[in-house]
Length: 202
Length: 98
Image (tube, chains in turn purple, blue):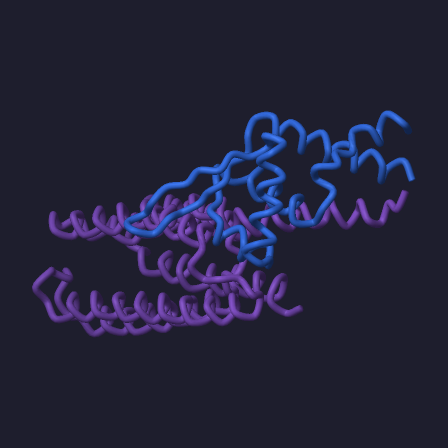
């Protein structure tokens, strides 16, 4: 009886089970970069607000338009970076980028995220500016939590952290930008860095 | 000891069959191309091993058309899941004994 053979069998079984149900090519470094974009965006927006001399930022003002454009630029840059780096990592791991597990990951990530996005836009339309930062954090956290079943474990803890930050941001509204910078900036850098050192540097 | 070896299932005594069953244990179903990519095997190889498992009634094959393309997908049966679980348990016992 060769018990080494059986040990290898069990290892193969475990590998196949996780590979076929989880998308493991998510790049940690892209998280770090997304975090840096978010912090740069937050610094820029903070500067805009300091130079804004009226008491309120209204929907029609230039400042508001600039804030929205900054947010969209940060979002697009993050998504693009994540896509490019994930494709690169998938090539290295010889995993195809578009497979059933990545599809499941994407769908389960997008459902809460799009819900939150629409919710935030509706809030803006009805003039509840203060709740937009917490809502985006909360729904992003829920999206991560939901997607974490189909990818690396760390995404789950990122999601939980974002949810806690989102709730805190509701309580301490008025500091929305700071919570936003912590949630989308700092958290991405920390968790992205952790994932990079844990999985990518082998 | 004799008891344990009896539970080692001959039907799973191959890397590809082991792979097919592992994937089907954690996924509701998997199609031919996905299995092929995951296991890194050729069409003929996968087909013959899938056939063997089908013969044991451990998996079922579903053929359908998606648009004009034929699509073959596999599912583990209840007996298949039970047999595979017993096989894993037996493997684990063997390793812990030695």
